[in-house]
Length: 300
Image (cartoon, rainbow, N blue to C red; front, side, top):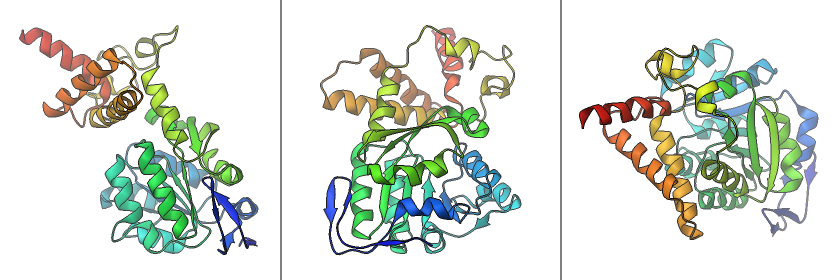
């Protein structure tokens, strides 16, 4: 399917010698070949659907089999575990909740790297610790594969409409091959630098989200009954879960701590979402913070 590049090649800033690699940039010539997708949650499911809409045969799996049913009905091939995905596809996208999930999907007993093909392009769109992205890139490199981090901004609505923003970290010569797939799921695909820099850009967005508009009022209002088509109008179901917001704020807090940057309001927000998780809000949309704080006030 792809030409073979022999000899030295730079991956993540390191030179790999005497290894045969499928030349990733030539993979764009073989578009509409099979794409693996692992992680079919609120974000991953619509992302995989958009790949199907653009004509890509999708081979997918999720730890919860019921998450795969809808995608299977749309024509995706469903397999039992990530290793089986890697055995059938040499372009794989992962969308997972946290760093431990990413480690397990890539390096676990039934992980991608157990059966990954040399030259495979592995794109992780999870929001995780940048150090874990670098760890997975190094593990993939040992198997002759290419790992890129490509976390997203935009939420479930943007995932459904194909208007996500991807912030990509990895070897620059692989960006074109990654962009071919990511543009099927997003309106903006931005190259940020080497592996891990995509995660850093997402973290920066979490730390700095102020603007002249009030997004929570005009786009994602958290008050029930004010807007249609947002989680607050559906008992805070769907959307971006509170436990995921707590995880992302934790990553931002870690970055702030490591760089000795004071983020008092960010730290407070992190604590609030952790309390929400402990009090039954973990699976509700993060906008349920409005309900949580109102109940806290009423209980005083």
